[in-house]
Amino acid sequence: MRRTLRARICLSVLIALPAVGLGSGTAAAADPDAVASPEPVPGVSASAAQYSQHSALDAALGDRTAGSYLDAKSGALVVTVTDEEAADQVRAAGAQAKLVERGAAQLEAAMAALEAKAKFAGTSWGVDPSTNQIAVEADQSVSASSMARLNKVAASLGDSVRITRVPGVFTKEVAGGDAIYGGGFRCSAAFNVAQGAARFFVTAGHCTNAAASWSATSGGPSIGTRVGTSFPTNDYGIVRYSGGAQPAGNVNLYNGGYQDITSAADAIVGQALKKSGSTTRVTSGSVTAVNVTVNYGDGPVYNMVRTTACSAGGDSGGAHFAGSVALGIHSGSSGCSGTNGSAIHQPVREALSAYGVNVY
Image 1: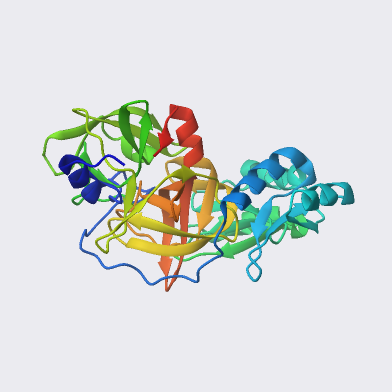
Image 2: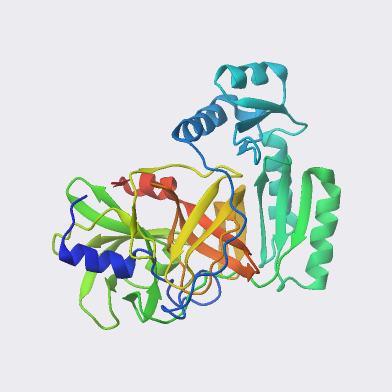
């Protein structure tokens, strides 16, 4: 990790910066001095081998699996399968197999029905392989008539769908304040990334939609310029550092320390992770659903990840990570109730692939 004074200044203000005010939708910071939220119940730590098995088996099994999760007691990777031949393949790869009723195609069909018949702002749905279901959440903005419609559609899909009412409203958690600034807004950065000698940071696309030039202080000199943005549908964007800056590849832990980031992976249901953002700082949680659709008021985003990490306005664009592994870019949440949040992240590997960059 190459570290310079300029780079350290950038990272200390920038890595967990709050999201900028973009209206209803994602996460931004309100108070940079706010204390961290209470810690939710932690999940299970994922190993490098489990990340690899998770990705490889999902690709190899196709519709004969409905996804993988980490067992809360043993920590083992459990892969859902629809037949014994697939189960043997999973065991041969060193993971545990669980026979389930529904494969990927059936769960995708249920999500397609929700998309077509119950797509209301304030709802989200995604795959929970641990229960072999589509886990639907509806926030407090969803009206009684919309809830009735949602329940009717879910009932037509049998026990493949479960619905939970969550407090708060799904927003992109953006607000004014001090962090990184662009176009009058403030956001958080997720991870520093590289393409050859060039250095960039990735953040939420609803942030980079708002401005091309970004600064570390309000009205201050530019530290970087937007070179890509995608929101809605996705929620990622990328900013190239100015002046040959070589910032460290780490995340602010808000305790005087930093977590080095050396690799990226897709999150696994049941695993533990942390979120770093400038409002709630570092919070912990676990992954509860993948392939999540979130219907924000200004457009849907797809293939997201739902977690229990607490967040608040100003956390948009921040980092979701597990140890040295980058997992996601904070998008938004329905807020935090006690120690349980419903925070959404954009899988970081998709953003890295889209821009041809890598963490370091």
